[in-house]
Image 1 (cartoon, rainbow, N blue to C red):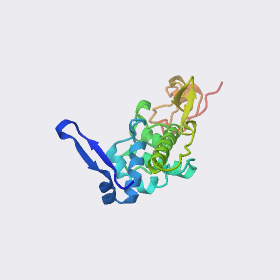
Image 2 (cartoon, one colour; image 1 turned 90 degrees about the vertical axis):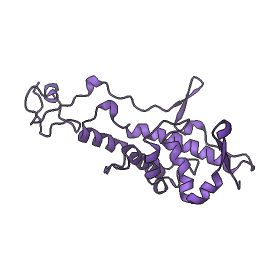
Image 3 (tube, rainbow, N blue to C red; image 1 turned 180 degrees about the vertical axis):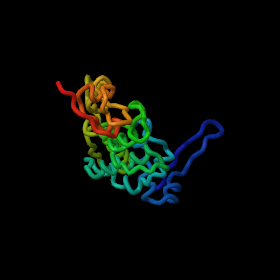
Image 4 (cartoon, rainbow, N blue to C red; image 1 turned 180 degrees about the horizontal axis):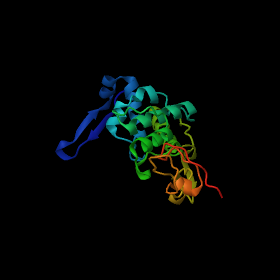
Length: 221
């Protein structure tokens, strides 16, 4: 396929954009990863992650060059995609050293005291998103490259982060979050040595999510 044209606009403002020229100016590595970055950060079939500005400035070439190129997603490519999405979620100005969403989630909570509803997803959740993205990217690339060639063998949909349920395709579910009633963590600023500390009252040790930096003693029963 030597030329690719895309129509945009409506009415008298309708124009044809020569995508092949844009690809030539961007260079093959960047052009190859831009569509991958677009799908992973949210398109018509994928949930939004971060912003498109962050998607462009987070070095997609370094992380996504081989992503979605094969029928089966390797652990290495999955890990690189998660590192990329961590950068996208955190934003261009972030100084985070996190490489996984679990680390970023914990970092955000302990540093900014963000509510649970505002935290990034867990790594298990984002990996389902990554697998769906890899499936869509692989499928799109195969269909575009082999439009005039022999029939292309595509990976089953259920291998790409979806599961079949009652005749419908649904995103693969991960573990459900714990009920709030079971999430016991304190906001003590001292040594957590009084009965007002919910951790001590419940007879459990403080965890990393606790704001208190001291140690506590187990309640005797």
